[in-house]
Length: 376
Ligand code: ATP
Ligand code: FE
Figure 1 (cartoon, rainbow, N blue to C red):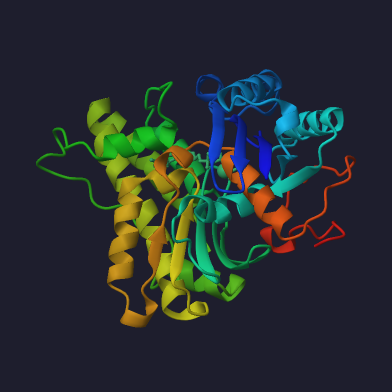
Figure 2 (tube, rainbow, N blue to C red; figure 1 turned 45 degrees about the horizontal axis):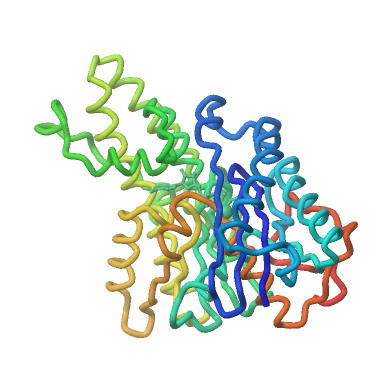
């Protein structure tokens, strides 16, 4: 079984061709970093325009890399949601055009389900259900319990910003120079890993408060209101902005601020993620043996290190094995490989092809996957 998939839910135009024997025949990603830098984030209309050019280019490149023609693939898949309306519509329309013209079945895939199932594509020994998934990307910060291929329960969600968005915004508060090779989150990580410059080499900044620390009054209030564990990054961003502003007023030079504030921000943001997950692993969920970490922020090495340390410190029966998609499939880029793979898994489980008229779903919960399809 060979599937060609398209993905354009946010700012990457992607096309992949994957086989059911887990061969990645092509995986093309066309990025929009420079466009984002120009507009200070994803501009919905400009991003859609860029996809209109990028998606066809990605298809042509993928077919040529795989040395295939459209007739050679068995099915077409695309990201049906969640994501930005205009952006999603480009891959959806293109996928259906390809499918109708070549007489192929078409499958719309949930982007976050695809993130969650990526280790089933990439791991020699994939985790067994049930496992936990930490989705940390530009649009999402969710801890999810994967009970089966199509069965997910959201354990914790963010109340405000996603962690990827928080990294992006922190990078913007710092005015980190845009790069054509690194996304803002990766730039911030880079700065945070460099040694302190004066005046911080002798007098480091105090640590930033970790959001929703268990003993804080904010945490207790959230517990009362929401019941379950949550993530929150808005307060940390406000704090970061204030610190940057006051350091600039004091005349501290920019490079020194980038490193010191970058590090303090990263420690608090990652500390918060790890703290909430530790709480869940200790008490909340049924026993799981695996924690899959997926999405652009999963490429952050400090996060990886802290998650490992957390798991190592858990009681014997509670430890988890950590799974990360290979760097080239999660370095802050989305990819269509995971979309194609999820389509393959669904087809093998008996999913029927979609009607061409099925609408995209910009807002779409992982808890009601394919509830509008006859073969759910
Ligand atoms: P979604 O998948 O929710 O639709 P998205 O496609 O924008 O969102 P991804 O491409 O998975 O998200 O991830 C991009 C995000 O990951 C960006 O916010 C980026 O700043 C962040 N990111 C990438 N690399 C790193 C890193 N090394 N450290 C921290 N954040 C990072
Ligand atoms: Fe994504």
